[in-house]
Figure (tube, helix red, strand yellow):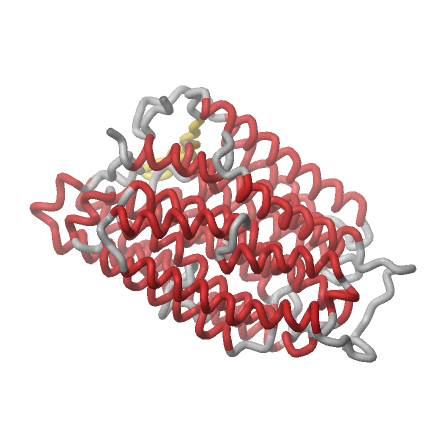
Length: 508
């Protein structure tokens, strides 16, 4: 049995620190490289991402065999910066490490002729460093530090193109996240004055405070959820996300599948389970409102997606909807719903990054940015659109793609908790998903192509597109199928989510 997260930890500090260093050090070096140092920059990027993936794999094996990994650095009297690796951490770490490697390959191909590549890849690496720091945070202070570093490192990526539209999107993103960060800090300080600790603990660490500080705890919960809910794109805090789609496709993929929105959703998981504890949160009556906000966000995002002609904006509103499946699973309260929410953390990431990779391919190869421009594109770029189609079927929730597994467990979790309304939310969302995704597939596969594409690039011969642009979506599309088909095999996201629910959140 994997030990509880509040057990005594051995001094295995080097692996968590190396996981951070594997992207931090290459990122810092890349900043000082001249633009023409293509191969040096590429080698540093790929070496860092491969090393990180290997280190995460080693910790995955170690934690499964009851090893513990932690590092602690003193910051303030009684407060340390704590990195602690456990099953929940590894769920997010594995997603981040795996998709960072693929996104790095994609970005190398996508930005081949672009200016300011050293600046881009420097911040790109620092963004991943902040993300894995969020995943390994052992207390709320550590989470807060890396969560705010994520804001600082993603802002330059959002405004990378330097256009007026990009700068405006960056300002809106920064305004939202800075205000949210202030609320998160306020909630953290308030909680520390009451509890005297910020250490994440199985079943939470505020149970003894409920009788004396009930209303204060409710207010703190609201502050913390708003603080992380901006990045999770909960309504009405989501308006920054569609505007941020002016960023390059690799950034969009990173924001939606790996970094920002996932960090927000992951923060909600930590607040409900490791700060308050699911039973205390339910006793305080805060999980029901959170579930209703998640349900509204799911439907709102889907409805808004229906009316978007810009492909990336349609995908952005889809993300607003899909990420709240994770929040819904957390807020329903119950083992099966938790499994559905946690596994969707991975499933949505793999499926959504596929869609953004494909959208980037269409823009970079044919100059296609709008749904109305996609007539017949499946004949010109069949492999890209095959990957896109698999991602679409997963988002709708059709078996055997991974999205079906998530929705199945969320539905079962609702019934387990004695709630029927989540089934109607899930069904309505799936119908809306079909309504805004299937017309894209109809255009791509069944409509006649135009005489000329908006802005076609020649990659030589009969090539569909550059291989560095095509390989990543084919890999992630295949993963979307495989983790759905073999969901019950050992070490799959579903089995790992079950392990987390059973051994961390709902211990016998």
